[in-house]
Image (cartoon, rainbow, N blue to C red; front, top):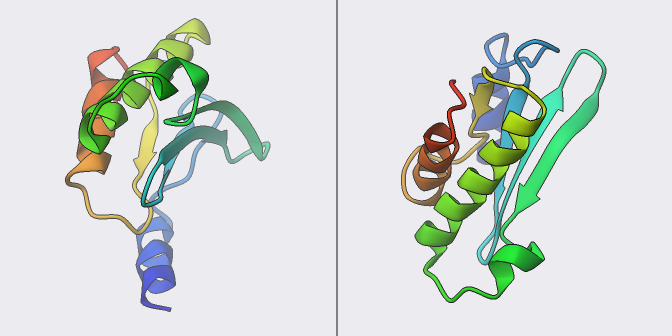
Length: 113
């Protein structure tokens, strides 16, 4: 219940993705991290990336290093679609550790939020 309250409070009028500035949504499980870019106007997922992709599965890295790699891969996919600005929706997670590493990886590829 508390997690839902945090998520609702964060999204309440502040975080909404549009076609020119989509929303980057993050989900973190105990083993993996998932990130997707959503256009809330049309309700479509534009890009998706996770730590379970075959490119990243073979590497033996810590969760934080893997999150950074997922961010870089996600940023590369966003560049291919010519997306340069977005809104970062951390959801119910605090901005530290794996979430921060993911955001830094996305920023390294030139995406601004």
